[in-house]
Structures are given as structure tokens and as C-alpha cells.
Length: 532
Ligand code: FAD
Ligand code: PHE
Image 1 (spheres, helix red, strand yellow):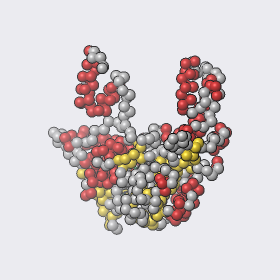
Image 2 (cartoon, rainbow, N blue to C red; image 1 turned 60 degrees about the vertical axis):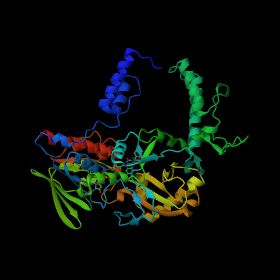
Image 3 (cartoon, rainbow, N blue to C red; image 1 turned 60 degrees about the horizontal axis):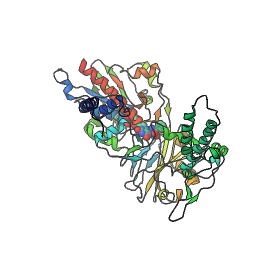
Image 4 (cartoon, protein in one colour; image 1 turned 135 degrees about the horizontal axis):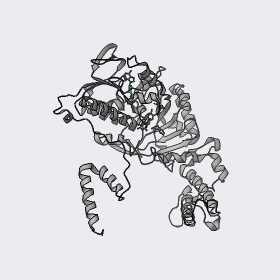
């Protein structure tokens, strides 16, 4: 039992009091400061949503805000401002809110900038997330899922049973665990040899060396000192047939390739992905499709506040308010707000006539746009589970499809949807320039190199998205000019117009960045209103 000393009692009392007033997060952080628990990493800067009570006794009232764009950022702005009674109207050019947070289901139809129309003919229950698909645990996106009642489930971002296929190194896919075992094994062997031979003596004490050697033996499954620390393979690599009953010790895989061949095959280049602070397991996804997030936000904002098919065509900051002209159903309409939040991609906002200044336009144009694309391949059987025993995760390739994603949900169901490519940059532009049937043909041809005939024979439907060809989006994300005067300019309002989006965050290409940017603008705008 813990000794009850004076200091322990008072510490406990102190911790209890922080817990009461500051919530579990504050309690945990305080425990960290006292050396009692690891310090909780703050997922986001503190944010206090505007509240109706902020106006009590001030004689001031919530204002009208026109929000341009109904993606995650625009929806989050209207949602948070709405908590204090702001009269928000979202103008969204597309037929549905959500922006890049798009989920394709049976019947989803999309006509791209080239005039190619696709209509998803999926089974009920099949869905495809062509944009956002994964959420790290520390991301504020999960807080919104909790707050809005959007159920989440684990997204398998890494799977030892998925494959690595490097065409440049031969045409045999290997399991991800085998690739990792060989790379770690040989690295461990080299490091152990160098350590034991004294090459690192200037850096390591004798005790350090023994500890490191003990670690490396397990980490790389290498032989001991008597064996010269050699890596010869082991069960980290997996088996040709797994151990069984009685005396069935399983059939090992063939011997690992030589050290030179393992590194020549470059199978190790995928290993660092799972170390990414934003990509490490566990990752999450909303149950039923990523668009459950904008759907829940839209409900919370109130559908009456969201004007769809409403394309903003001009923004004018006047002394009495911000006038926004938009086109809806062939008609030109206008709306005036006390404030405006422009939550559009920067390159699209730059094209909209406004009176915010040439420096604003130049700044908006200083965000290079990144291309990305995905294809969803619906299959009538889940052959990757039945035949290959791959339950979620990613197969890594050196082909132009880059990755193949297996679904992390509805295991053992009849059907399922694989992401047949997810490429970024030049590879994405190359696929984007093809017609949807050409993209499909290419994706099947490439994927069949790994998965064989079933990859074609079992196909039931497909849908591809080239983000740079998508109407009103024209890009996957941007490469913000962080540290530039242009970037900093857009962090400040231009008169009564604020800018927001993942492109104004350090977490670009994540909804987390979109939510944080929205929070930051909401706080700044509200502060201005209550303090004037
Ligand atoms: P957008 O979604 O771009 O919203 C802008 C809105 O403005 C759109 O709805 C658009 O239709 C509208 N609009 C444009 N022009 C006009 C106009 N003239 N008038 C009115 N409206 C207009 N995030 C994650 O969290 N996890 C992931 O795994 C992830 N993966 C991604 C993968 C891909 C391929 C892509 C493309 C994105 C990914 N993201 C991911 C990032 C995430 O999608 C974005 O950060 C987020 O959705 C951005 O929201 P937003 O509202 O700032 O921008
Ligand atoms: N957030 C996107 C995704 O996870 C884009 C991205 C890819 C961001 C890789 C960082 C690293 O697919």
C-alpha cells in the first residue's frame, strides 16, 4: 500500500482540486509536472467557444456573419459562432456541404472540370473516402466526433500482414512483417558489431554497450556475441505455414536475402511511415464514412443556415458591412454580414473579385497547390481477407498506384472496397489527366501484378477522384508559404473579412488544421465583437 505521508496526502488533495476545476486534462498535466505521470501532450491550444453569456450586461449582441465555403472550416466556424447566437449563413458552391470531406456512396455523382461524369453504382453499405480517411488520436477532429456524437472505429494504418511490392527489386510481394524483420535485423547486426568491436566507444560506456546489445538482440532477432551478432532471419519474418498442433513447428520462410539485396530492394523505405506523429497507430475513422462529420456539423448548424449550389462571385468590404454576391440556381443574389469568414481554398478565393487589396490577392496566390487522387474499387468478395488474410492496412508499392488500402471495417462482410491507388504530386496529375475508365484500367493492371486475376475478375464497381480536377476545390491541399509575410498577412483579417482553412495552419492536409484555423478565427472575431 502507498505510504500515507503528509506530502502524499496534500498532493492528493491538490490533484483532486485541479481535477475538479480543470478537468481530467489539467489533472493529468499537473500530475506530469509533479513527476507522477507522463505529461499529457496538449492536442490543441485551449479554446473556449463563444457563449451567449458573453453578451450579458455588455449591451452588445452577436453579429451577422457570412461564411464562404461549407467545408469543415466553414461549418466549424458557423457551429462555434452559433453557440453564442451569431447569425451565420454559409454559402457553399457545391450541391452538398463537406468540401474535401467527401464520401462516395451508391448514387453519388460527380462531374469534373473536364466534363467527365461518374456515378457510383455501389452496393448499399459500400462507401469510399476519396479525401480524408484517417484521424490520429491527438487530433481535435476526434473531439468534434465526440461532441457531435459521431461514432468512430479503428482505422488500420499499418498491418504486418499487408504486403510490400517493389517492382524494381523483383516481382514477388512479401509481407510487411518480413520486410521489417529483414531491415531491422540487418541494421541490428551492423550496430551490434560496431558496438561490440568498440567503434562507438567514444560515445558509449561499457554499461551502455551491454544494454544496447541486449536491446538489439531482441529488436533484430540477431545471434549473440558467440554468433558474431549475425542476422539469419527468425520468426519475426513470419512463416510459410504457421506452427500447429503437436510437433508441427511450422514451415519457415526461405532464408532472408543478403544484406546488400535487402537494402537494394528498398523495402525499408516504408518503415518510417508508421513512426510519423500524425500517422502512427492507432488511427481512427468515423463509422460509416468520413462525411458523417460534415453531416453532423450541418445538423448542428441548422440546414436553414447553409445555402447550397451558392457560388460566391464577389466580396466587398463596405463601411456598413461585407456585401457578398453569389449565384444560385441561375440567379444572382446578395447578402450582407457584419463580418465575413472566407473558408475557401486560397487559389479559388484569389480569383473572386474583391476590394480587400492587391496584397491580399498576391498572398492568396502564393500557396502552391498539390494534386492527389484515389480510386475506390468495390469487390463482390473480400478475397484479401479470405485468401491472403489481410484485414485492413496498406500494401506499399513502387508502382504509380503507390499504395493499396484494404478496408478497416465490416470485416467478413460479403463485399468490400479497396483503395486501388492513392498518389500525390506528379503521379496524381498523370492519373488525373486520364479519363475515369482509363484510370480504372491502369489501376487494375498495376494492382493485378500484386494480387493476380481476382483483382480484375471480382471487381463490382469503381469511382476515382482527381482532386485538382474537382469543381470548386481544384486541388488536394496546398504547400503554405509558412514564415512569409504573405502567409502572416492572411492570418489577420482584411477589414471585416477573415480567412480560414487548413492552409492557414501548420497541419495542412488534415481536418485538425481546418478545425484549429476555424477556432482561431472564431476567437479573434468574437473577441473583436465583445470588446468593441
Ligand atoms: P474545403 O474542404 O476545401 O472547403 C472549401 C469549400 O469551399 C468547399 O466546400 C468548396 O465547394 C467551397 N467553395 C469553393 N469555391 C466556392 C465559391 N466560389 N463559392 C462558395 N463556395 C465555394 N484530413 C484528415 O483529417 N485526415 C486524412 O486522412 C486526410 N486525408 C486527405 C486526403 C486527401 C486526398 C485530401 C484531398 C485531403 C485530406 N485531408 C485529410 C484534409 C482534409 O480534407 C482538409 O483538411 C479539410 O477537409 C479542409 O476543409 P476546408 O473547409 O478548409 O476546405
Ligand atoms: N492527411 C493526408 C493523409 O493522411 C495527407 C498526408 C499524407 C499528410 C501523409 C501527411 C502525411 O492521407
